[in-house]
Amino acid sequence: MNTTEPDEIRGGIELPATREHIELHTSDGLTLVGELATPVSRPIVATLVTLHPLPTHGGFMDSHVLRKAAGRLPALAGLAVLRFNTRGTSSPHGQSEGEFGDGIAERADVAAAMEFVKVRNLPAPWLVGWSFGTELAIKYGREHPIRGAILLSPPLHRATDAELAAWAGDTRQLVAVIPEHDDYLRPEEARRRFASVPEVRLIAVDGGKHLWVGEHQTRRILDEIVAVTNPSALPLPTRWTGR
Image (cartoon, rainbow, N blue to C red; front, side, top):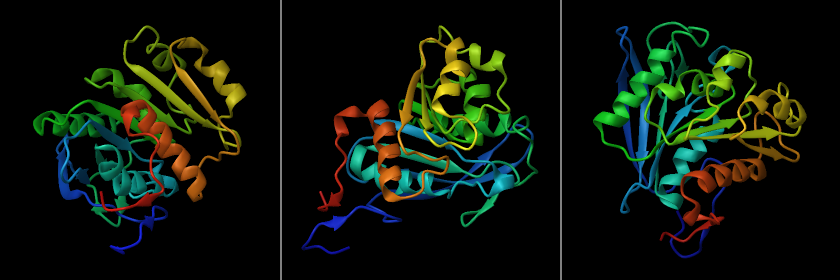
């Protein structure tokens, strides 16, 4: 990076972090590949356990919002970011063992990630699901000691009405970020579908699309994640001064 002029924070820029290739081990004997990114010289405020979009449609741990969260948020907000490929998923980070389980067998993948969080004593874990990942968060998040779940573009295809309604009365936060132009679930319908969980925080994003393409939408999503997990870090800078 340029050491004399602040660099604009955009695209695939990677700010300083400790990045560790990791393996997760599931209860049914699979090894999943992943990465843990943590702040270099500051304490971890909270931990993001990220759950990627649908692997049969190109989703993986390196999907751009999750990759950019790992590239920026350890330095900008003191967040640890755990990413991994669910079973049968391949990305530039490698191939996880097993086969796609249509959101059922992946219950063990979520459990393996949370066991890693426990063993490593990572603080204040949040599930951050995107698309298919939101289904896993809704279905299995309540089984684990998390602070809450952040749902980016939830399609509500695999998560049943009963599984969603089970979050009602839960003390942990449920935040759903709904794009105005989503391909699957738009704000008006989302309000109806999430009505069974009065405590949910619904955030409708004007102009947003399911894949959150473009720097403006990326920044909006990262802002919403930080607003929930470490609001004292806002506003996130748009240029990096090296401090």
